[in-house]
Image 1 (cartoon, rainbow, N blue to C red):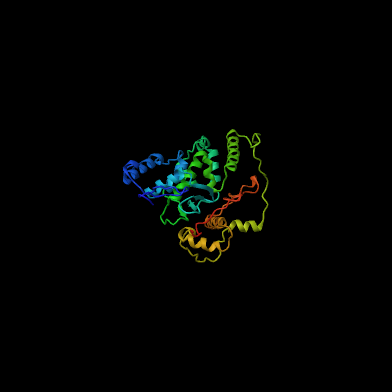
Image 2 (image 1 turned 90 degrees about the vertical axis):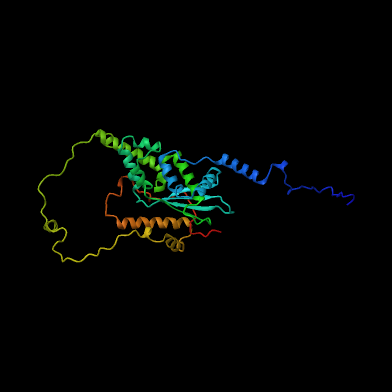
Length: 340
């Protein structure tokens, strides 16, 4: 060093990273305000689904989130942080890139519906004039929308592998926005939440519409006119056993017994689902198998508590795919996995 000068080597670069001054952009507070205003201007657009069906799904999640978390979740959606999602077995399962190395797993679980709710909606669409065309536009009456997805007083349960222990986190809002966008693009995607794919739904709906048109015109399914219904006539065969059954079909002469009247409850809804998931994880390999096992138990419970019916099986369409069955190798993570 000579005369206050410093001699540097040929390969040394001096850069003043710490110096601040008015000529470099003003004060720190002014720069912070300017950056915040720029971010609000660039990403301040509020997510609002176009169709009524998509709004029902999105609002049921986003309206329960704190304002700040909702805004950050919508920003995650706009910025493409949702890596993927799947609608299956009454659940929206998605992965969101967040503040950690591994993405966070989100599961949005809708209220339970029985396995025939999607087919029932298709029959209603076929029998109601103009309803199928309205569905293509995302329009569905409130009653049918509540039967398919959520009623007005129902709300989905949201779980996320992130450390935020709030009711609805920003990652759940982002996944709900992605699902709403898919339903906006194709309203029949909503049926995937009840175990019916878009292509299968279109095929079934076309057949039901053709049957409804045939009934309206008095034709059979092959276009032939219906003839008179012929019933066998003649004397009835007397059978002593049938006579006894007809006389006392319900066994009123049997001794009466006291029938217990237990209190009605929904076990899977009134108990802690975390304990059920933990128990099933020891019997399954993949996390998606745990989710399917819970869905199967819900179907079994609904079958046990529902009145007997012989109208649930359609023998004309051949083997039916189980409600919610996934045939494309879907792999989803469970909420019971500990966040790393």
